[in-house]
Length: 267
Ligand SMILES: Nc1ncnc2c1ncn2[C@@H]1O[C@H](COP(=O)(O)OP(=O)(O)O)[C@@H](O)[C@H]1O
Ligand SMILES: [Mg+2]
Image 1 (cartoon, helix red, strand yellow):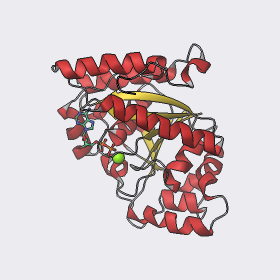
Image 2 (image 1 turned 120 degrees about the horizontal axis):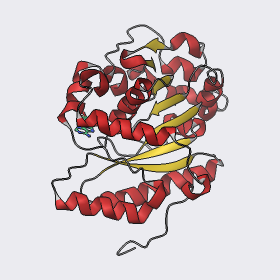
Image 3 (image 1 turned 90 degrees about the horizontal axis):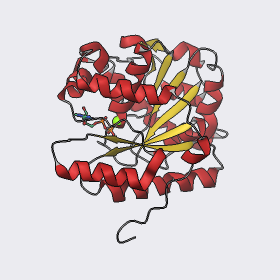
Image 4 (image 1 turned 180 degrees about the vertical axis):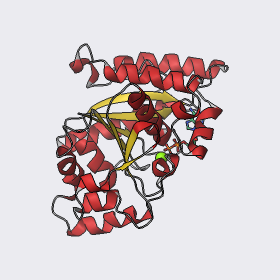
């Protein structure tokens, strides 16, 4: 079982879209996939057409009041889901009265190692809240999702260093990778930026890039991963390429642990 978290302290950069549709792509390849919604906004839950109502959610998993197996619900496209809603925000308060609150998810996931090939964790737009720290503690790989817009390079360098500090502070073992999203190849600016991300991050950057696609918004609105909405769309192709990379073992894992020290102009 491999655990991936989707992180960035910013909102709106494509974390949830990446988590939902990579889950869909891996499931379409026959992998057993669990998506855990760790954002009280519940966008991944809604993006899979789920409304937990009164049912238990990731809050109960983290608080240890429900067995994780009983909170899993089947979603579209062969993805299993642990949903979230606004009640998850309570965990921040409850955490003060819980023993080792930041390790709750990592403990709970241990019981699932035989059941899934991939567990994907969709994080809130924070680096250091108890929900993101839970995700990082449980992760083999933390994927920094970077929107290829203005200041993306500077933003990615800063964000990566924040997560690397957390890793060192908590003595965690996750590797960092960078995923470029919302890429518009028609603009020269975006192409130059992608080149700059490549030279800066080298093998830490996924080769696959997620292009801007209206299909991704439509799929979220329909409550399905894009593979279910349109098998032949370019977004389906982009996430399939990303799934291929995730299914490959890195040639030399040590190459992936640190970002590449290319100096930034003005560093
Ligand atoms: N590659 C993409 N192409 C088009 N729209 C996208 C793409 N990625 C994300 N979006 C849209 O951008 C908005 C923010 O994306 P989301 O994945 O929710 O970001 P985050 O989880 O980082 O807050 C959503 O409306 C989503 O549908
Ligand atoms: Mg989100």
